[in-house]
Image 1 (cartoon, rainbow, N blue to C red):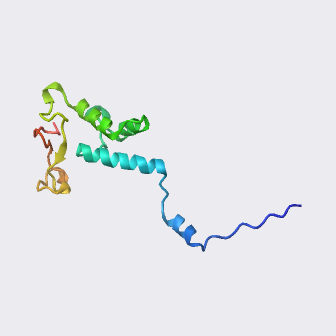
Image 2: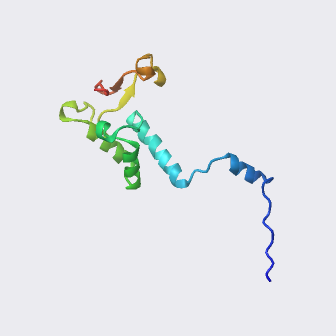
Image 3: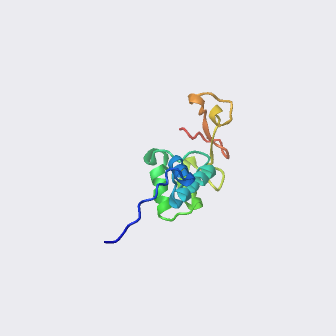
Length: 128
């Protein structure tokens, strides 16, 4: 009868303690999170929106990421989708949204610190 060694008890091993206290983030998830962070930085706002209303959402962004779109392609797609002919930005790259609220370092405490959303290039109202 083959002899099988007993399972080692690693509960006191420092690595086991580290793994129990840290959450694992896969390489795919790290790439996705970095992709989102850069896209949000380029857009000037969170991409956690409503796809039908805002033209962007986390689900839509993930689809773009999974389809292999570059961050720049995605950002251009979002900007192009939001610019109606009468709402086109004066800047060739499209609208770049910013917030005036205290939550973003501004002095506007309206809308729970979000303030006003506006284009840094042409001043268009992003909440309209």
